[in-house]
Length: 274
Image 1 (cartoon, rainbow, N blue to C red):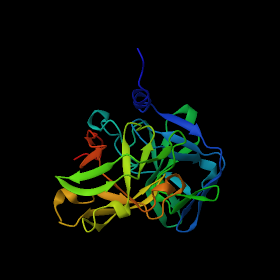
Image 2: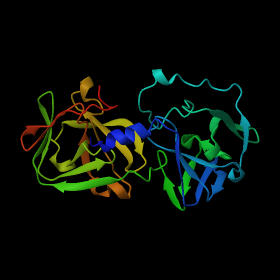
Image 3: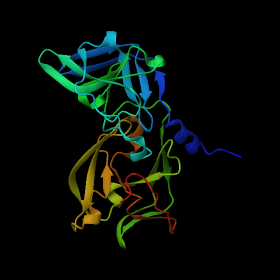
Image 4: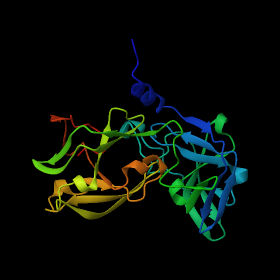
């Protein structure tokens, strides 16, 4: 019997996994170097959808001290099947939480030492706790990039229409289709800003960051209805992988009706459904 790749990848998320990184990594605390290593490792704790960097303790430029008290290990049965990049303190593998310390400055539980022989001597770090990260001389945003994930952007002349409760938000025949592996069955339809219905959307204060696409600005429907809040987003200054969707707007497939060549696309069920 054939095995679907997304099922295979989902099963792999149940295990502690790692992969060495063959680049120089640096991070900062209060503007000063906190680590500098060429022996970094990406670590996927069980159920984590994105990896976290781990570095040899010898390459840290801050002290580490065991956290007191130690956080309780979460009940795995009570957790969702997939965990996002937040909630660093909810570790799903045995180990010791540590504080990062420099003089009077202390970052509680910003590090984690897994109890695993293959990761001996490594400290897993909370990406968000440090001021900034560099891979070689390139800034990293959001979280570490997964080397086994890629983004495809495909130009399409198929007709695409986006509706919210019958109201047309956008209509185009020049969409950019963005697909992020391993979610190959989930297409995001990026519509040129000129093809969004004039006056139907207004800027929102919401901002998010994607390690692969950059920083997103959100849009809500101008009528203020709750279901229209943050219904779409755009990347004003996308990273290299997503440069083709600059000045385009995407909408939540999960919360809108997307018609492609007149046929309604089935709404996907994802962590962003509601």
